[in-house]
Length: 75
Image (cartoon, rainbow, N blue to C red; front, side, top):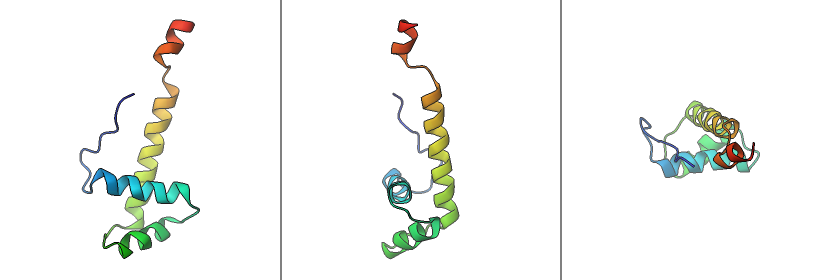
């Protein structure tokens, strides 16, 4: 499985992962995630969090739609 590339992102991968985790794990809005990150001293807008979540979901969908190497040998 290939690793996600965080090139061209301003923030560290750990910050991006934490923001996405907060949004997807708990029933929070993008603005709630923005507020939680602001309490930790990070100035990230809710729109940035929204873009990260959309980016990750597109990557995951692309990975899931590709056939696995094992599936290629079974068929």
